[in-house]
Length: 234
Image 1 (spheres, rainbow, N blue to C red):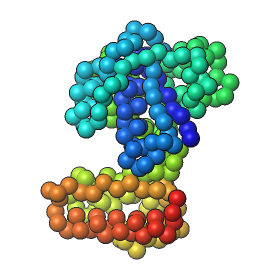
Image 2 (cartoon, rainbow, N blue to C red):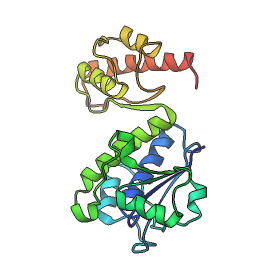
Image 3 (cartoon, rainbow, N blue to C red):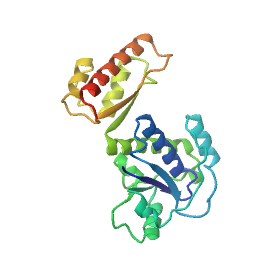
Image 4 (tube, one colour):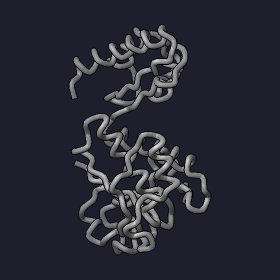
């Protein structure tokens, strides 16, 4: 089990969004008990307040449930309770080290580390007002975090309008080599031995509005993944 605490300044925008997104991801792949998650603030300014309305509306528009989430402050005892304590910016991490009197176990991290951008911060949308951009990068980083911890890769075919788009999604998310072919035989070979990213895959199939040939081909792709998982149970 890896216990995760997301942290930001007030616990009403960035860190609750990360908590809600990451929990939803773990539920979708049946890993919520392996990666329990929460969030907290480094300050007392918003204690007891719900998710900030513009962020809450955006999360709900994207299908996420914010019910019951209210801000709380980080406690010194949290250091022993969580394996990963993940801030959104340099100030968050400085405050965490002050609260915890250091970081002897190396538990404090930057969320953008998991996107290979460890020197960068996620700007606070309270000031920038860019809630959509903030949520987009948090979502990407949470996917990367879960992949690093569990090997799960999410393949989203929901907006694919043609068969090349299906392969483009797999190439990007699974880090296919340039010379890999765009065909089902190549996909089988990749899963059974050629280098790629991910050890478990969660697929979102094309929408009902997608062309029938795309839906049928996505089903064939799904069958290849299902056969792989049948032969390689986790």
